[in-house]
Structures are given as C-alpha cells and as structure tokens.
Length: 582
Image (cartoon, rainbow, N blue to C red; front, side):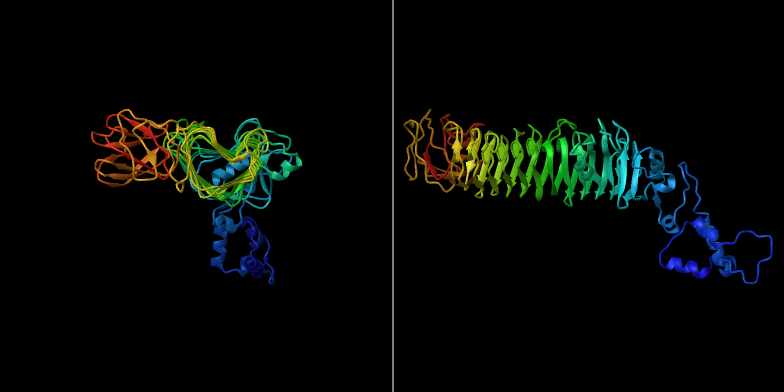
C-alpha cells in the first residue's frame, strides 16, 4: 500500500488497527535486492515519519487478561476509547457464550475512560464498575443480557466508598431468552455521586409486548445512597417487583438530588413503579410517566428507616396512569414535602392520590394537579394538604369516590379547582367530602357530581368549613349567655366559664375588647394561629394568656379563644366579630 493510498484513507476517516496498518505499510524482510520499481512504503515515506509509525505500532498490542486480541484503532487508542470486542466479548443472542469475564476486563481497562458496547447481544452475569469517571456507551442495538436468576447485573460502586462521575448511555439491559429473574437488580448503584443514565432501556418494551406483558427482571434500576443522579430519557419496564427504587443512606444524610426527565416511561411493574424508600430529598420527576404497575409512585421508609422522603416534585409533564391499585400513595410518616405541580393521576384502580397521616410540619401541595377517572377518590388525604386549582373529575369508577376526600389532618382548598362528574358507584360521589380533620375551604367549582358538590360528616365544632368571602355566622346549639357573635360592633363580655359553639367558617377572625376598645385580627389555618394586626395590646396568640389578656389558640382539635380565667369558646372564622373582655 503506497503513501498516497494511506493518506487518502486517512482523509476520508477510514481507520485500521495499528498492527494492520504497519503490516500493510512496511515491507517484510526479504533476502533479495529490491527491484528498482519497488514502491514499498518503507522507501516512499521519509525516515522520520517511518520511525514515528514504528513507535506508534508499539501502542497496539498491550497485554490483557481477556480473550481475543486487544487491538484498537489508532484514533480510539489515542483518545483512550475501549471496546468490549477487544477483550473477547462475543455477540450471542442465545447466550451459549458467556461474555462476563471479557466485559469485566474491558470495564477494568477502561477505568476513568469511555468503553464502547457495539451493536449485538452480550451475555453477562454480574459486572461491576468501581472506577470514577467511567463512561459506558452503546451503539444502536447494543444489549446486555443477564444470565443469572438471582444476582445483580450491572453494579455501580462497591458500597464501601463513594463512586463518582459514572455515565451509562444508549444500551438495553434485559434477560436472556426464557429467564425470569427471582432476585437481584438489573442495574444497582450504591453510594454514587454524579451518576447519569442517558437513553438507557432497563427492560425491553418490545419483547414485553411479544411476551404478552410477562416481566423478566426482578427489580429494574435500584439506587441506594446518592448525591446528584440524572436519569435522562431512561425507560424501565418488565419487573416482577419494583421498576425503579430510590433510597438514601445514613439516616438520609446521603440521599439528595435526583432528576428524571426526557420523557422516560416506567411500565409493567409487578409491585411499585417508583419506590421512594426513605431518606431521599430533592427528587424531581419532570416528564415521562408510570403505568401498568400495581402502585404508580409509593413513598415509604422501608430501606432508610426513620428517614422521611424530604422533598419530592411531580411536574406538569409527568403522569401516573392505568396502575391497578393507587396512583400515588404516601404511607404514614414518610413525607416531608410533596409538590405536585400540574401532574396527572388518571385511570388507576383505586385513588389517584392517597396520603396517609404524616409527621407534624409535613405538607402536600397540589397546584393545578389533575386526577381523572380513578377507581376511588381523586385525592384522599389524612395529611396537611393544600389544593390550589386543578381538576378532579369522574372519579369513583369502581369504589366510593369523590373529587377530593379530606379524611383527617387539615386542608386548605382554594383557587377554584374543577370538581365534576364524580360518581357514587358505592357511595361517595361528591365534589368535596369532609369525613374528618379541619378544612379551610375557599373558592371551588363543583358541578354534575352524583351526590352533590359538598359533604361534611364532621360534627359541629370539629371542622372549620366556610369561605373567607362568606357573611358572618350566627350562634347555634344553645349559645351560652355572656356571648354574642354577629356582624356588628356590639357584643357582651366574656364571663367566667362561658362556652359557645358557632357555625364554623374559615380565614380570619376579628376580636374587640369592650373595656379598652382594643381590637385584633388573626389568621387561622393548618393548625396555626397568626396575629396579623392589633390596636392596643389586649390580645395574644396563646392558649395561656396572662392576666388582662385574651388568647386565641389551636388546641389540636379546633380553634378557640379564652381569657386569663380559663373561659374558652370555639369560633368560626369568616367575617365573625366577637366582642369580649376579661
């Protein structure tokens, strides 16, 4: 091969292994005298370049413990790019050839560099990546097929130290034909920082369809102990147990920042689509969705016990759809802050959103959220919940269902959420139903619900229903002498031992004291009392007001007002004026 041909090949980007290049470029040793017209490269290339080529040739045949010749292209070698074929990996869709050792050797050699997985199906049991900065990238059609029924497949990190800056790109990990795993994780990352998955398919939706939805993985992607994980266009499908499991470590001290985006789908999961298993924080699901699991998104503290999931965000392009049980479920005492902004939960077998009793200080916030066509309630909550706007439509498909069901805790509902066509299949059928807890109810839009717009089954004095725009309420249930509640400035003194139950309202109360003329305005809600304005100094936000003061407080059941002698009264809020003195 003459010099002109070599330069032409280089110009159009055709690369040959260095050993092949030299073999075709430099003449073999010959005993005779070369002919005058011999065009061997050894004679055509200047001595300096010939020496450089000879030195470069020494780069190709390095020693390794894998099978096969370890030959790379000149370009790949100079860029420190490795290929599993160079370590003896063999594509074999039937998995009669095991490539575990070859792939592991390639991973070890490529520590901190890029490792290429070419098109084909490569069968492995367990391969472990422990070197920081390793980048595994597949060509279109690259697949790793798992051969062990119980072990983990691709493991990132050794669990003893933090592994950083590992990226996985553009390949599929699945099982060999006919294998359904009974344990282990397809990808298991432990104590990782700056982990990225880009267009990785954990499971095969195409083969799931061909197998009529039969799952073959046990768990899909499991991340335990993390700091900054990005899952971009990642798809997880076909797991007997959980498709995606995320948990912190060290009582939540190592478990923060995970972003799911790029429209990745989580599909066909026997147990949980997403399992946030304790100690997580800064978790964001921006786009994509979960479907065909038993539970779509489940909050627990199963793996990092006692460490709640601190902050979770479900975005407007993220949907939880067609799961056989609940869409989003938060078990008791597992949430810090859940923010659902425009997210969807639809056509699930039971409730769209189900929040159990949470620890004090927790909050579930729904802004523009949508819950549609679920078997039970659109939203059922025993937590501290705030709902602003959104829509809760056609729920109660197979079980008692309401648009919003406050079963306990406390709630603020405003922003005119649309509550329509909720069904009374087996009871329910209200736009909003209050069966427990304490509710501040602002504006809402309820129409065409099977049983009506609003239901409250909470005894008077236990719920605080009403609207900040409502007129003053009146005294009910045999109000005791010594009190009057009306919309005027008139009133009578608070006597020793006086008590009164009034129709409850919401938002604020205005108190005036007849001896000094002092007035005060309080805002109440969510178990909180805030003194926002006062003329004089008669009133305090306290359940034990000092002598000469009147206190407003939350007693764990309802809002009350009392003087320093111990007399108390339960109040409604909206527009209510109470005149009292000590």
